[in-house]
Image (tube, rainbow, N blue to C red; front, side, top):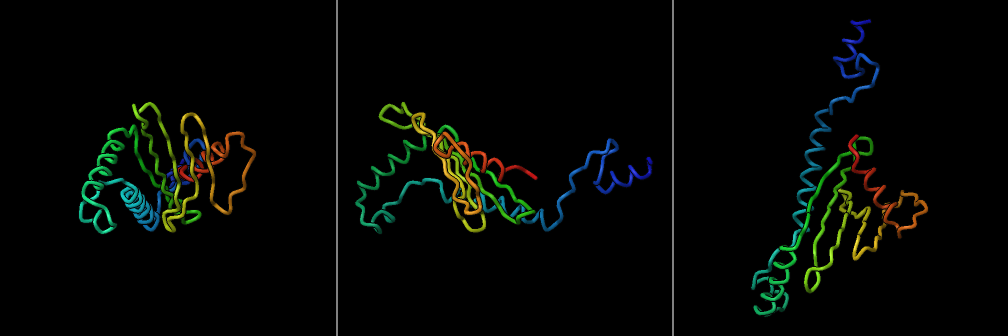
Amino acid sequence: MRLLQAVLFGVGLAFPCGVIAQMAPTAAEEFKQTKCKQMADEKADSMTERPMTDAKGASVGLKPADVAIMNKQIELRMANVITSSHASNYDPKSNRCYVEIVKQWRYGQDFEFEQYVRQLYDGQTNNLLGYVRINRGLKIGAVYDPDYKSLADNNLGFDNANAYMDQKMRRR
């Protein structure tokens, strides 16, 4: 029996107590996980607000003074970000890469309001799959995955969308 347990443990099939162990990812899965993380990094970078150059502003018909005003607003928004993060999860069963973007910030004349947004994207197609927002206490959410079967939700989709995103971001 000890020999069988040692063999099973050595190949990652079972612990001596009989619990199934998680298999190490294959080289292909590791590559896909790395690629998925790279896609998440690129998605987060593409969603990062940046100041505009005068040349870029001129290309869309803005005067330097208008660009300066816009850049000041961007600077204020960036200074009032409470949290900003992103994560990825490659699911080998579905061969999908999920990208989660989370941001929370203050706004208003005296920055008295907070807003929280969580989004889930399909990393390969760039499609938005789920979205939740809390703004001034109002919670809303939506799932845009056509395969998703909606459940009863008293929070304008917030609970469903959070549960859906939690499930997609759960490590296998």
